[in-house]
Length: 246
Image (cartoon, rainbow, N blue to C red):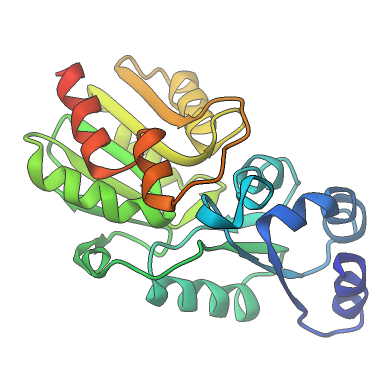
């Protein structure tokens, strides 16, 4: 399907391939050889991104961020609500000139994400931007982070919409902070959090940088809420993590 989409693109069409994150893993070579190397515009609608709960161990979408991040020229968006999802899909179809992946989780949106303040199309913030402590995340757990910020003193949230490449504005915003806590619903190795940390280090960042993500393992079957709690990605875990570090 990925190679077929590349052929459609080469002949002037705008193909959209809707696929579960876990099944996209099988397409890595085609993404590199048949899409990116050929400079074809293909939209990947990556469903079931992140934890999928009762679908089971084989269906968690925890690897797409890491492997899509290695594909040259690929852009990756991870919206946190329906409005951003719609905007990302329209942008990918009608504005971008490269291959684009738009990833979204199983389930519904949380209404509190409408409280975010959009800084640009690429990212939003919530809370007091003068704070010296920043929480960074993307996708579904943005809703958890918003609730955490409401209960934490001296912290604000940066919610990424574009996760590859990392927006320059986000890097500039974080360089002056004393503490940055990144929560990621995916594999830690080669994830967005690692890449942002390396970028900040290269630019001379001297503050504390913390990553909470899935550490080098396959995730068992359980409800999404149970998994968010177990892997430190729900509101309560975020509050606990920051309170231990202050």
